[in-house]
Image (cartoon, rainbow, N blue to C red):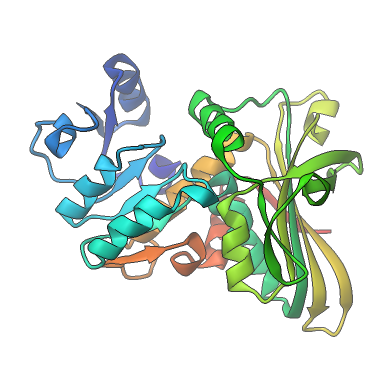
Amino acid sequence: MLRKLHPELPITIAARDMDKAGALAREVGNANTAQIDLGSPGLGSGSGEKHSIVVTALRDHSLDTLRYAQGQGIPYIALSDGVFELGPIVAHYAHNPTSAPILLLGHSNGGSPTLATLHFANEFTTIDAIEIGILFDPGDPFGAVSGKDLERIEKIGPLPLVKNDGRWQWADKTLSKGRLTSVDGTPHEAHAAGLLDVLSLGSATRADRVRIDLAAGPTATTKRGEAASNEVIIEISGTRATGESGRFRYELIDPEGYAAMSARGVAVAVECLLGLSGRPAPKSGLFFPETLIDPAHLVRRLETFGVTVRRV
């Protein structure tokens, strides 16, 4: 995705498995590889190369990747942290607040649903509730690392965080149960997820109710005999600037599936941190995606990539 947006941007793929890294570098083009060792000074790369950003596509429990970025004074993106895991990163930032920009991006689908929701929220004068539902097709499996992230959060994490009746709450079994109506009108049982989307949307708006629910089931494209897609359902309750009041629905449909939509969000975040999106690159700070990326820019990028973005 990043290569599509910026064909000339050089990329280093830092990895432990150099065969896989080499194959990916050849596929991406204009890319090289570096073998890394978490826990070694400079990540053990030994190349002496200078880079302009660090994107961690795995859960780095040591945070040595963050230390490396802070030492180099370059932006850092954390993709895998749950709501309850932000403490160590925040502490690193508090001790070195001016060293480098840090983007917390442990959101669903690379932050795409959250930013799209805030784009649609601009149509409202008052917002009472924001509810996001994501339908995962069994034919569109998680990558190995994504699966491990969800397993970790489910195993060691607390109950999912939601905002309900104006209060932040850890949802019990009753409150965590949700419903999702897919693009073709099929109802699905869903369950609240403790992802960073809730923190972003609950802080960026004055909505009394904010939650994100996940469900599994065949998407409309699969039922038509086509490739599995990823469906994101966004529902906003409130009053629009036109005077209409009620519950309004929006949909994001990525024909290439969950991993593709996630990659799109990450690629947009990278270009914004590098100052390639028309805005100056930040020199330092602790960011959520909505405090860094213009939601309208993200939506335009999604549409350019072939994602269906529609008001229903």
